[in-house]
Length: 336
View 1 (tube, helix red, strand yellow):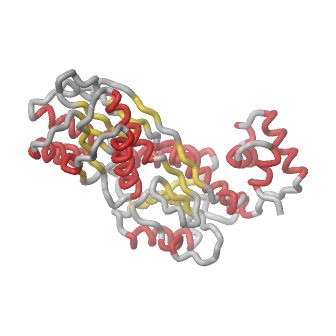
View 2 (cartoon, helix red, strand yellow; view 1 turned 45 degrees about the horizontal axis):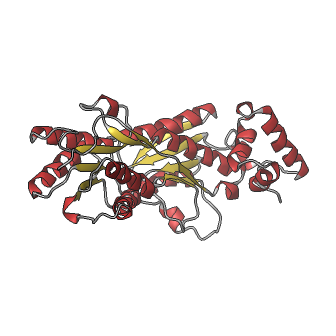
């Protein structure tokens, strides 16, 4: 039996384009739509009847499971889910897990009990239903940012190794060799990948990793304050700091100023995320743009794809990132 992947190959388009043609034909160019529909007809493809159950027999609702509500990245992701869900007449329910496995599993019980049609997860934990899934068939769960390649489920993420390696490369291009690092939660795969990328970036530049100027905690602004204070008190030399989030970076800039150090004259600071406040910092924050709203949008589309073709929806989407140059980074003065 033909599936969405077969149609995509025959029409010469992506799987995402096929699913968009089936779900939102008005958003597809007529020429593209024609190729997809011709492939559908040639392959005698029949849309999975489960797709219509989102409108008829099911809850018309999805759950977004997140650890807390204090992070701007999380807010953007939830908004992205809402954007696509609203267009498709689906309600979004929010589940706060507090980073606890039992709370995450309790939210999934609503999906298993048909009170919700699926779940989008941004959490340190993975639903036990996925880990214990012996059926060989995908479940209506989409993982975002956190992932395990062996798990049978669709996921959306960034290439966090290259995100951090690119941040280091940019600072090295400005002459910085003593680069400090402030991580987020080391329990997260996302954070571990970024730390690996930081070390990789230094090695690519022929630089030695100084573990004494690597600090961390979580993604809150308080981590930036506390970790930067610890870096200053260590007495170790550093001329730049890579921070795993913009909130961390803003905390770092505040603490450096309190210590009488100027950004970027004395220390360059680079963040990640590009939250809306980054451009209004003093100075404005150089950052790696990671659009969390796109994560939410793509995750919701993958969940919709699940109801069209569960097997074809079981794929990974890696979103692009972009360096945004602002005033918190500068060329290292000679002699430093």
